[in-house]
Length: 311
Image 1 (cartoon, rainbow, N blue to C red):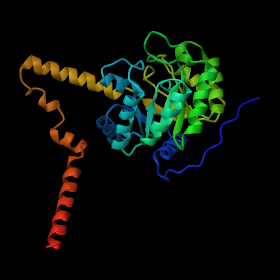
Image 2: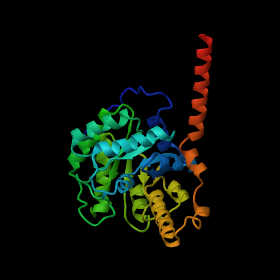
Image 3: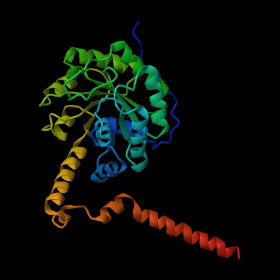
Image 4: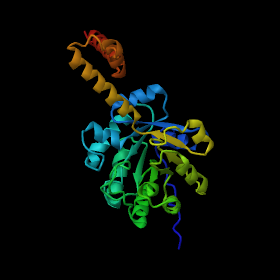
């Protein structure tokens, strides 16, 4: 007997809730653009640049912690990072949740926890736990199909309105297009809201072929890290719903910081690098310092008025 998709549950979040905005972005006719972030500061820069969604990047979060992207960090650490992003910007946050931090029970706990902290969506990949970053040589074995389908069904029946994205790693693991399409069909029937097809090819032909062959109804997401020559227009024309630029902000910051620190050590002064640095005012603006001072003045003024009225 073929399993059907789970029924949609009653939605009780407000009309402009983050999850609903993420769903709308995935259903929009134009390509939605998501930028990877690992801190509220980087999330605000993504929002300022005009991106539609913030991707709570597992690679960036683990790199910022100085550990490999290989399930070294616990779920709580990744959750705190994603929740920090969600609380700092108005954009919906889609969280990279690796392979779900364990079995189906871990996934159910994960979904409840992330949704309670304001995260709009979670993305889990069909590799075995602990996972290894998809671009690293090593164990990229897929999880058994029934095991991962159970995770997707458990997640979809647990969430209230959170978006559940199933990430397909068949092309990464070398299992091929037929396996990717087979799994896509199963995950759609299990209740996924969108699919992410991942590839490490240097050109986009593999993801183009998947999108053309996929006959289901779910939005399809791509991560053009290795096939970085592909444009928004090409992805839009091919029918993709979202592109995630998963690590470019972190990579640019590493190069900039390394260069600045090297020059300060070499020159024995910061004078030569100062013209290339963001002024302190930019930092204060990103910290929302002006808003904090305005708020402080407003409430202190109100407090004085209340005190004077009581005399």
